[in-house]
Amino acid sequence: MNSKAQVGMEYILLLAALILLAAGIYSLSRSNIIAPSGISISNTSGNTGNVFATVGGSAPIISNLNVTNGPGISEVTITWDTNIASTSTVNYGVSSNLGTLLGSNTVLQKHSVKIKAQAGTYFYKVTSCDPAGTCASSAIETLTI
Image (cartoon, rainbow, N blue to C red; front, side, top):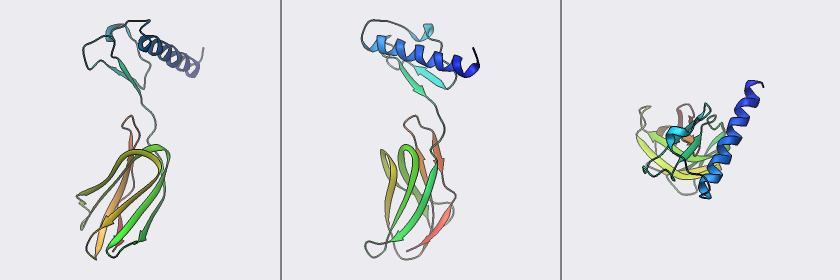
């Protein structure tokens, strides 16, 4: 069996075990689970019935980054897309050190964050994270309000 097929089979077996666990048909502890690479397993409560698996993946891909003025005075709206559902965060400031965070933990593929600030030039970058915590950020850019 090639390695991709073996990893695929491991994911299927782990998923089946988690379904059986959730249904109360199967009891397991962290010590009797062997997870394929890319999956972390934690038992946060000490109760063998609460085992959580997180599948790691590739970071979201940020595209179509755009800044538009408005809708109000001293406002800009930053928009971008991601290839997978992820969070929306903009870090901005008057220098490339940034410092002010705005955004949402709601996972989306089309992102929009409004910045209300005094007129001037600001530095910013956007960051999006998938539900497993894998993040991607844009380069630091400038905008003028």
